[in-house]
Image 1 (tube, rainbow, N blue to C red):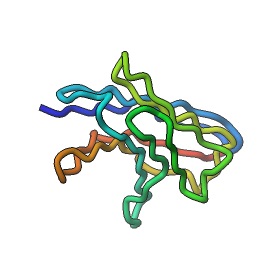
Image 2: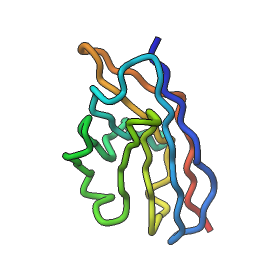
Image 3: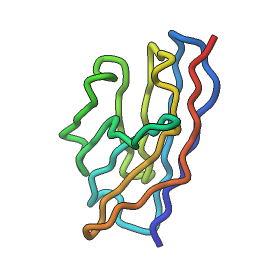
Image 4: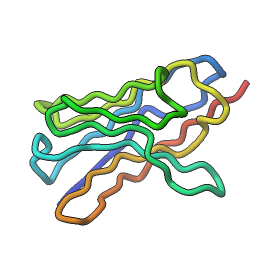
Length: 116
């Protein structure tokens, strides 16, 4: 079955960096676009970044453009999110997502807290 496992979250000061990872299994990773979402307390889950299956196409939320970079390694079936110049507003649980046969699959999420 599809499994998505996020890691790499933590507490970081404003201006700092973190790199999130998503380990995927249970499907042919190289066939599917992948995305990162985040959900802050009391808010909806929002798209942060998207990457096509080959990595040739990416899309970012306006709030993270120029600061976050999505990448993937199809050989390792992993996806990454490099987050630089972090702000307190980036505090949220970050989720890995794949849409497969009209269904959304999610990981358990990893907490990112940006605070001094």
